[in-house]
Image (cartoon, rainbow, N blue to C red; front, side):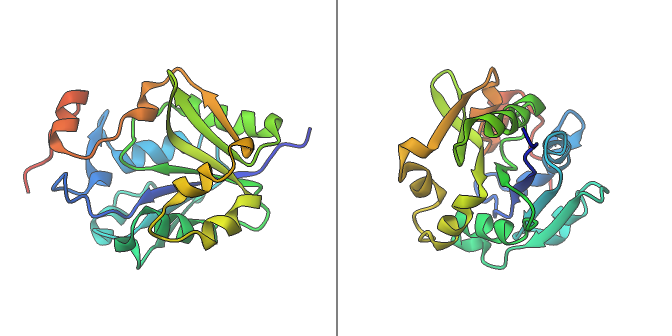
Length: 202
């Protein structure tokens, strides 16, 4: 079977209002959320597109030096997450079969979870794959190229979830032994509960 060409889209454009500090620059295992997640994703993806928006100048300095990484800016980041997904999809290479979309505020996802999505995509023949831990869906999500145009057409206020829910027969849930796929870090309290370093003083 021909190996599928998969690229990654890492969404890091949000305003981080509830955190009070740019989430891509928070720390995990001595590295930023952004750099840590980029390294994890690049173990599976051929190329990684990092979508920036709010706090762009500060966040771009944390992007790892790797020629497989492309940084783009979403000027419409205030419109929400789907606007950044659309921007990221426009930057995916023409030869790519699929894109794994992930969020910078889910930094504890294991590299193996990204790899499992890619492996399952190669064998499932389904265009949407979602990781699942103990019956609960999480992030990342893989979209085959056949879904890209539908995502571009999706109303910005509905988000990508509406596309995922539109037809259950085209979705595969990939079970992983990784609680990190559910760990959404939005507030200082979330960091404390996860045992991660506090928000730095500004």
